[in-house]
Length: 193
Image 1: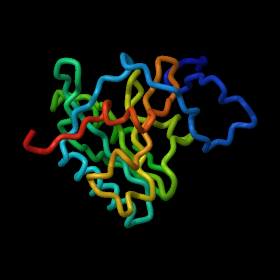
Image 2: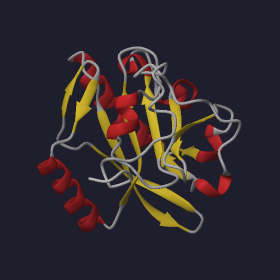
Image 3: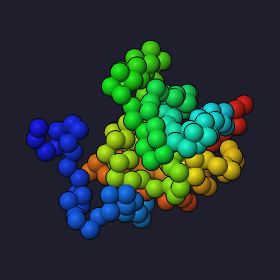
Image 4: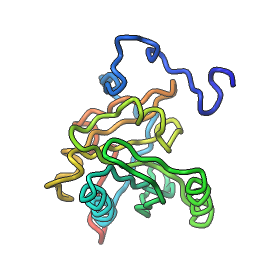
């Protein structure tokens, strides 16, 4: 297949022999506001996400949750914390093709789209080379949240303070969302709001 074909995307700097395969994507000064549609996320979505992260951590494995949303004006409302059928080990997760088909069927049935993916790491939260390559969300402005330490000791209240957040740029690179910018992009609300 040719460079740039789906599944074989060219990424600037990845041929650099000095780049460690698990290195984080370079930080950006700011993420372009027009690139990302802000998410409105209720506390119960965070609770459901953390429950799956903790389940994975109890098995010493990464965990995966997809946030499904519906557009509403200039924001996306996260309406479901969807846990796909996936395989995991300590340092990665994998979604099989039949599970991807099930996700697509669910999206059509619920009239939602994947607005963010959340997964855990055993230690520090960063976007690894594997995370870059195998991210499920692949559209410009897609959000990827990485939870450190399998979510150990993490509660709903401190979620945004601890996760590492990334957005997919127009050049197909995962760029870090700076911590002080994250609350404007992922807006957490009480369940009653």
